[in-house]
Image (cartoon, rainbow, N blue to C red; front, side, top):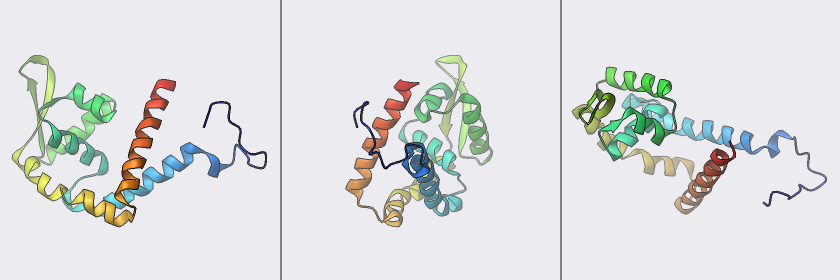
Length: 153
């Protein structure tokens, strides 16, 4: 919708159901709730799952790089990493290339958990009952919304 686009006159622009932020917040909570029964047996919360996904994709990662990838502030990420470390899934070591930096790597237990995690995406698609092409299009649109929101702030 162009920046100068107007809602029809009979639509209240302040109606809750018209707010993009409301739809995104409810969608986020609802989808994360679909993940919960899959992640609980793995001993992971959704934010911890996201950390593990990043590490399964590439490890080791510096805490700074991981923070940027996940768009999380370092304090929040640090708490997640401490819990994952306590669970024996990751370890934090000094980065050999930069002793001032911490690098996060998976433990054998963390790597082994990937096999169980590979069942999550198809199960989520099935539970949502939404066509995969629609989900891919939604992902692309959300990625554009995220980029637009970041450039607006």
